[in-house]
Image (tube, rainbow, N blue to C red; front, side):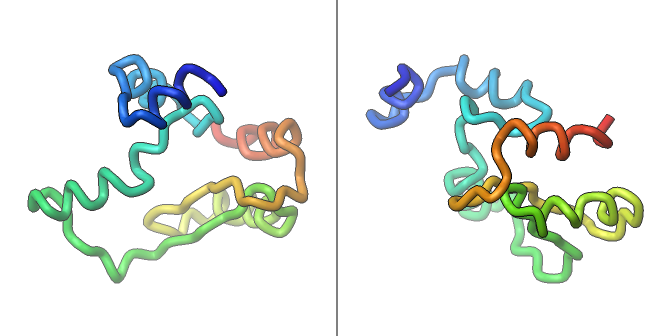
Length: 107
């Protein structure tokens, strides 16, 4: 277990964790998942966010070939308000190949 996991397990996150995560253009296995739950609920409870029900969204599981196959069209059409690139629980595509495919047209 890494030091980061140990700190997270005890509920202690330091500025270094947030800075590193914020600096990552793409999510990494070393990033903390700030947006997973805490941010959404905190923002809603403090009036800094609203529930959105009409946005055009797309979820892409980058561990599946079918998900990776959606990327060229998403990039070409740009028809979504936002999209989520996620690494699912049952990888069909290994991490090295996913990294290349997700980042190749992103620049």
